[in-house]
Image 1 (cartoon, rainbow, N blue to C red):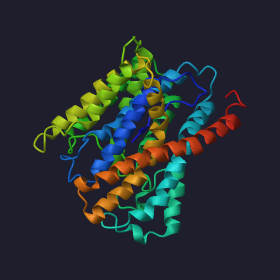
Image 2: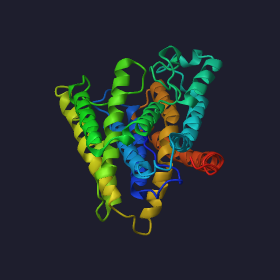
Image 3: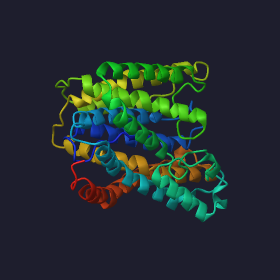
Image 4: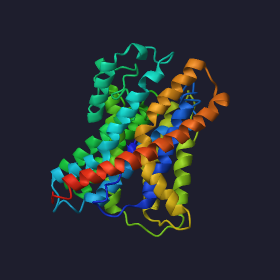
Length: 380
């Protein structure tokens, strides 16, 4: 997740974008794909390569809170709740639908040793799960058709968008009205909860949030609340400077943070949790501040950043069905990474191509039509 991509900028009806932040979202999204590819070969969280890729979701939430605050905080005198929710749905939901459709198309190719029950799932039940997924409403545990208890079994990362929607609702209905002091108190309290989850949790990390199981819901809410509203607070209090090479500096920081090996081993799990908390509470806001303080310069950098930003959300929300299929292939044939890497590279490239195709052939045209139909004709 995300997520992020869970965190996505507003469609063009809002202010100009922070292009560096868009590009950083793309860097993190590609790291998520690589993280998931290596995950297919890991025996535990201790030997997972690109070990902290899961924190990209938390980075997406922080980006989202920052951009939402920048784009909408000063517009509520001329925008209704209905208008806000229409804009957010138009920006986010078309890709939610296509992500579930891609998941349905790939589903039966994933049958085998890892998910033996897939071959027994009736097509009608799978299609019902797909239709529910297209609404982003969580699938009840009784309708789990994979065996991982995911709230979106056809496309796992949908969980982070579910919490993104909740964050948007909380912002629009309540938190946008908070003073800076009240928002700071909320951020502090949710930060304490995040530290407790990361350091005192039994796994020594903040991984989780994808199931309706109560503990997973607690993790999901904790992971969403601090970074999203910390990003909102940052958008209100930060005064961007003029930092050179911001995109390069921030990209390197994101890659290193997400790629660093597991810390502390099995004997000191809390050390890894502390690392997660420090990154989310201190380093991610620093990256967003630096990214919002720079400009894209050079012959190729602006184009690279734009491409990464364009595909960031599409690749996040469509790549996982390909990962499911790759993971099933690895498990069914017991293929080590040393032999599977050409296919892994192909999956990565295919994810990028699929994301770009979905963006240009589906997402942008649909959002343009919906904007013209439901926003351009109204002042709400």
